[in-house]
Length: 290
Image (cartoon, rainbow, N blue to C red; front, side):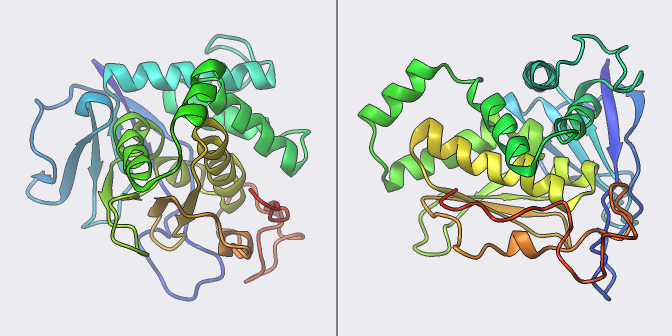
């Protein structure tokens, strides 16, 4: 029996238009679900109201989108993706010195991806923005042994095929963190080196502009640069929760992610420090050469 998590994403507070991304932010609810047998992607379920997509390592996980009613995404993690989440949680727990158990002071109900988000929140406690980014980058880098990273950068030089390879690796090996994704042509030259996330799983659950940038965007870009010597740029869309990750392209000198406003219902937002239409107060400055 797999565990299921439901998540809801917030809409941008500065936007006057409404979107399916503008639902109320809340913690994931968990319930037991017996997953359906493996099926083709984009299969309609429940009379067409829910779209189910298989994803993750070995396509063993399933995401179900209620596009008709704009409801929260439901995830059923397969065994390999649950293992990947557990391993990454252990890395984050080491960063924040959390107990290696589910009954610590984080949240007695936090397990799996819920625990990942809770640990990410803990990383931000008592650390500067740059310290947060560095801590998460180090946790990601620790997944790949240092000798492997060294040999990759020593023996393999940046090229289009390397960018394409990283796009495939992201889709096949890291979807447990971001949800279903597909490889699309890179905008600049048509090379199949971009990955589009249908609706970022982490962003949908954390519901925070700053968490998206400091826990995911900046550390991921640094991870690919430091681990493989490859430029990468993540471009989150805070209107619909999607994101495009492009390999072989360095981040813009003036990245629009650092001017994104808070979500209206973000639980981390403060009425005294968040002004409508202004960049989220927890974003911090854009780092140079990141």
